[in-house]
Length: 368
Image (cartoon, rainbow, N blue to C red):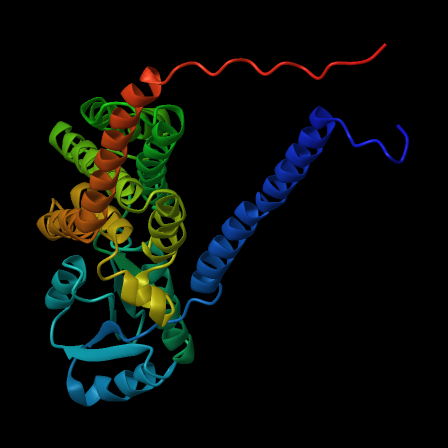
């Protein structure tokens, strides 16, 4: 091709297309960056240095003899423990078993005892036991441990319960995201039916693998049914909120949903580290975040006879109601825009069809 010749149209359009694709390909680097920042900032930030924040414990015995121990425990670390005094071991065991106390210390000349409830939170029970063990070691005495609510032998860490919530969270988020890509025009009732099926299957499969498969989930038939029902409700709530974000703000919802249900969610559940040991931001989220409610419900059903499940259900439903209210106006505006756009397209189509066909332009003649 000589310098005076212009590039062929096909070659020019191909070059422009390659440039555009390269720009889009470069933008995909933002996705792993977003995931890396989200996971690192939340999980490392929340879990890297657990320390107690006003953890409620008690010293059992006469105030005259236990006051020095209470003062010493309350000062190590600063504001780490909120120490009260109890008169009887029976009262201490009842309050710890009801999760109104994280632990209790029973002094003794021979062997002091730490009263804990590992089912409430293994990480918190271990932390409290460690603090009491230091107190006993300062008196040169061994420590006995009275676990009033122990975990099952095949689930001593409660990690499977946390991952049960992780599985349900991912199932709810991913089924909606996948449907948005592969079936964007699917009728809404069919979409909700698929979401409901996924909400039932995800906790069921997680239970079958973790329960009968590895023995980590156990209980009566009613307990297991309640656990699965709670898992299905949680999964469905996550999916519905993700769908509301899709309908209300479109592509931006795909970025907000992972922050809600993955990055902020997993770090604030209190699954791997008890909420009383988390930094302030994630400890605050634990009071009302949806994942924390899901894990608390799972724990309450399996280990505490369902106590407190009603509050957990209300929190989950409040999340759905709140996001439905927040997305109501954006969804309405976007639906009106789609109707208006469809009406304009319907009006233009008959007019375009009635126009006479343009004659084909003759090619340029060449001289011989």
